[in-house]
Length: 337
Image: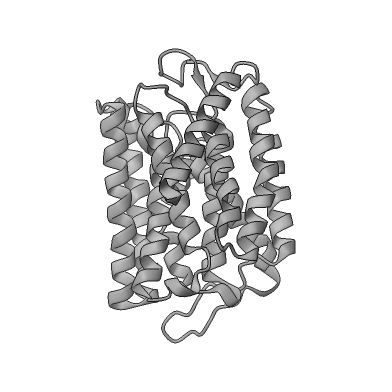
């Protein structure tokens, strides 16, 4: 029932917002970095957010999830404003920072990073607020950075949410996740969007508002499920749910910093740009990266359940190092350095 109701509301929001996209100036025009054809509405983020927000009233949703959704109103509205008149990086970061502080004030804080072999729960202490803000803003921008090919950002967001749901099923703790069914609805909404994003039929883009919201939302859900009384997954598994976005933003920031370039300045150093320069089509690039994302996520989950938290942490660090080296070499071959 909820599937068809969600589809109906999604389509209704889609056609209403698409008709107003020009008046709202939510239009993406092609340029030297954006290779798409024609003007494309930047309404995907608004549609996704409004659809899941409306249906949050029909599900049993936890108080922290409600806090995330209501705080995201500010993020999505100011993000849409930025899409319309391009207010810049500082404005986006300030908006994210304010939203982080609101949620931290509501109690959504990373207090420990889990137990590893001979160490019990490693508490962060006085650095918990700073670390929480860093993680949320970091992952938020990781999703924003990777939004460069049709279906990629939303596809990785879908994989991340499915990874969380799979972990709760493996732990047999899904019954303790109040928002389990709601996250399934979010997944269904993302699938609807991906259809309109990757096909030529009434194509729409996420916009910065959409990619930032997805990164912010997933970061908050990972904290919600791994901390406090809601802890149902080990903290180390949180980074394995978002492996590729973390790998990509780390690689890009390192390479930009080595060249003394502003880490937030747009360029074509991301993994999707490199693959396209190597000759892959947009669709094949998206499919390949999503397959790699699935493999990485579930490799980490497998390592955790076979060997435990510490090997899972070491494996993540080793793979991250190898990924950075690989991207440096591939970018030289693709001439995107």
